[in-house]
Image (cartoon, rainbow over all chains, first blue to last red; front, side, top):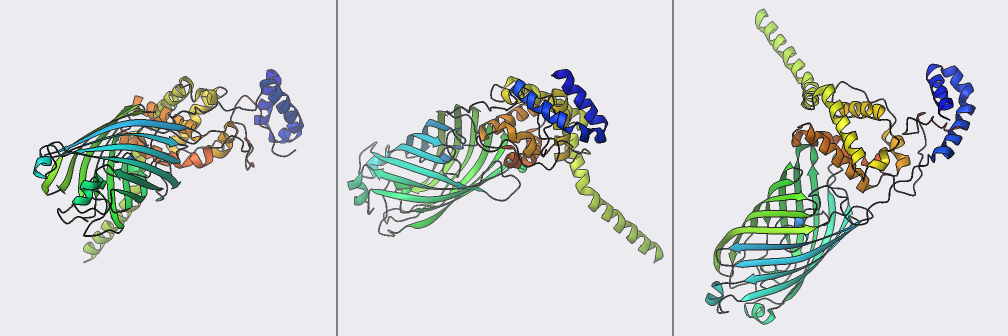
Length: 314
Length: 171
């Protein structure tokens, strides 16, 4: 076959008139070549298990377990899954301010780069402040968070020629285990569900990622102090913004801002802010360090400190 | 007065030249950050090498002609960053349709290119300017399994493989 083929090719290149005459010959040669060489390309099967996303493009686990930055859920789907794949990860996060500790542990599963399901447990340790609050030293509030997020349109990374962001909608259902206490401080309920819509856009040519999330919530201090209160028991829209600069494929740094309602009467609640660095040495590991400013928490003023989070998965 | 108006006119024309020349200048500057023609060929070489050694992309390159591929890639990249080149190969759709590239394979190829650019010490922010031009091409390059292998032809080069003669679109 080879000599005939290359001869045909040479002639093709040389003469367009003869090309027309040769066409039937080429067609026959093509059919024979196809059979001889199995020319119909069969793509290799895609791994069903993760690894299809580009590094860090699934975000990191935010404080409530969803994929995002430190405080804010983004429109990205957690895990390294792309179409036809699934991915999963576990994470542990510690936030420590002057008077409080917040630990979060969680697991996330991403399917098809479309659906994200998360479970997280938050443990809010009042440390010495527990005594001052009349709860006892090291009194802990615990909260379980079930999250679901669906990407509804766009691609945050690849649609770099348009302004169209990746958009996702999500819920976070939270159940606080200290119902009596949160009601005693004025909360209406010990459980609640947040609804949010996120838009995430990577301005690739500028290495800048921007996210905006609109959250409808009744939560007091993320739900750690229950839901609703004397100053409000209706869903209020909250704005959550993130911006990050990509220094390398494996390294991003940015800042976030998150408004919160102030439903309780005994203590005011303020906006949360952070500056973060996220590093993913590979697709199995991500480490995030941040400085957070959470404002006043339960009468303790100006709570700020560090945030460390580790994530492992695929 | 005459001198002044002449000067103003000269200044205006210089300013106009600068204004119009600026974009082309900037693009050429980007091209030079990739090392010009030689740099693009090195990146193409390293990307091809990475694609052959990466088990996730190797099958797609099994039949590729390296010589042709490096020239096509280099001229394609050059054109995308505003260099003085014209990509003359087949459309992205025609080249890739028969290979049924999915997102995982597309991203694996992006990683090969990133590795190649890393190897050539292209700064990350510069890399992203090329990637920003290439990324939207996923719309033409990806072709889910089960979709037709051959797209309606507007040009007579449906085969991505050099070693096969082009099958005519119409008898």
